[in-house]
Length: 113
Image 1: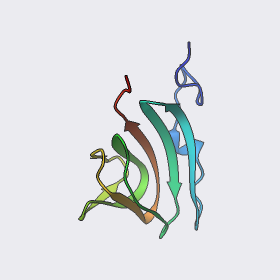
Image 2: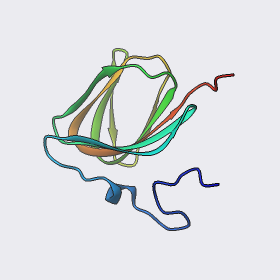
Image 3: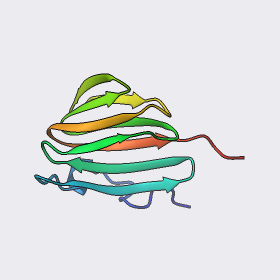
Image 4: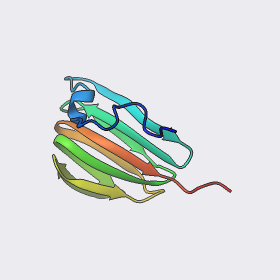
């Protein structure tokens, strides 16, 4: 069984090449969508924003290129290419493209029993 089937397996892949970064746009590409886990690539053009929202699980943002201002509750962090931040479950957050950025977002949610 294959669990990550949206990208090649047993092959070196540059995630930045799998999603285009374009001015004025926010785009996404889902890699894994399971009840307890999602993995999604995002590209956010300079000046664009993913507005305030909450997630049911812990959200790990791995910035692949550019730089994002990530606000968690009322604290803002600058996260640049090669850096990662974890947003705790249930915390309101938003992301702003200080410089157009690409990211891998991994959300780990509680397993429903």
